[in-house]
Image 1 (spheres, rainbow, N blue to C red):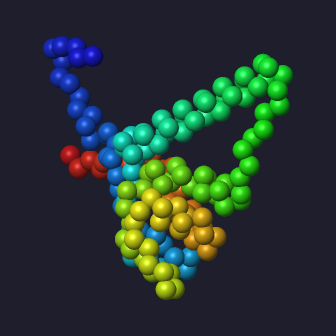
Image 2 (image 1 turned 90 degrees about the vertical axis):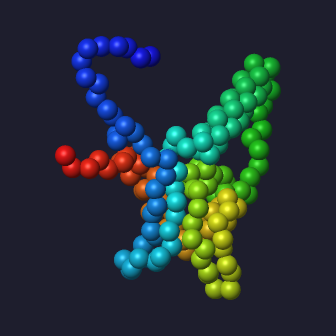
Length: 150
């Protein structure tokens, strides 16, 4: 809603979140790795699509459970393997990842893709990277543009 007034308007453009930022992964020994991730803000269209799809899935599951309870039937949850559960756990990070620099682990080369993000973040030896990414994604201040000093 736009309201016309005689008072000057305050420009809050610089306080609105950016759509992305870059994060360099730091090795457990404190050394920068050169492995850069481009992460999306919660308002980014990739994340919004994921969030809406997840909400629809959760609503459908709740509906099935309610119907089973109403009809006196037992609800059987879907069986998952531990790997499927880990992959499901990192989907919100996949939805907030836009890119990363290619890396090599042993003989394996990993170029950015949603599948590569998933494959990397479920690896126990990369917990140090996953924790940095999670911390960064939960820090809303990283997505705020820095205003220039007056």
